[in-house]
Amino acid sequence: MKDQLLKVALAQISPIWSDKTATLKKVEHYIVEAASKKVELIVFGETLLPGYPFWVTLTDGAQFNSTIQKELHAHYAHNAIIIEKGDLDSICNLAEKHKIAIYIGILERPQDRGGHSVYASLVYINELGEIKSVHRKLQPTYEERLTWAPGDGNGLLVHPLKAFTLGGLNCWENWMPLPRAALYGQGENLHVAVWPGSDYNTKDITRFIARESRSYVISVSSLMKKEDFPTDTPHLDKILMNAPDILSNGGSCIAGPDGEWILEPVLHQEGLLIEILDFNRVLQESQNFDPVGHYSRPDVTQLHINRERQSTLKFKE
Image 1: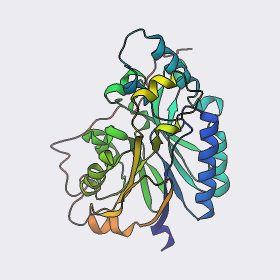
Image 2: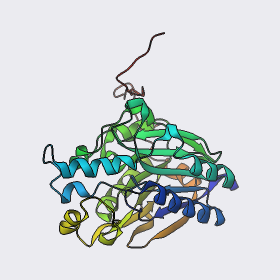
Image 3: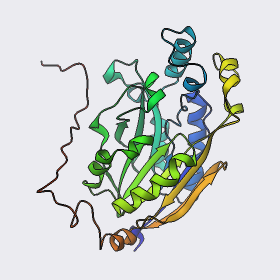
């Protein structure tokens, strides 16, 4: 049955680093290319729009009250996505026009948290062009905490697409058992994991999640080379002084519900990686293990989830 098959594209690309306008145009190009190949779901990497905060580890990011860090952070935040102001409208319009669903990692500067702090957010846009969830990364990893704020559970949602149920997490929160379980319990059977790049991140966890959940797992990473930093980047000389030639080598891949590779990690290759997934394999592999169904004991262990969007304000009229 056609509803059982889903054509997916992993957009393993580099950003126009910290330039949201130029990176948006590049994202739009790849959405149109994917649509021309009859793709039904396209996925972009963690904070691909407009890029990962590589400078933090390269310029002594933990130095307190540093002018360099302040100026770099301000430049980065200036290029963040403000959804409330329509920054994703062009992508939503393409999703609707081409009937293609989209997962995309963004640097979000949300107005519901004052409009100044930035978050690593994973946005799902359905095939009707509607933003259905914005998942702010629960726990930025290590040096990321110097620029990204921690998120909340509001985006721990799943979404229907043909026979599939989609959910997603950002980078190392894929290692967090309870957020994974929150998605499994809602029926997730196609898990989207987005990363800044590197097979170091994707080569083990992708197969592990697939085998644990009996779901498809799509890991999508970005690319980044030393020469990809635009020449107008603040303090570029200090960034390049310590930057390796390759900052992100890709590593995008797909594991099937048995935990085996459908697409092994792809390195240093920019473009679309396209595969067709068959939902029937989910049912086959769930026959002997289903972590939230017949192989669970909710009378013994349960997970309670707070999906309230967090804010410092509560208005009472």
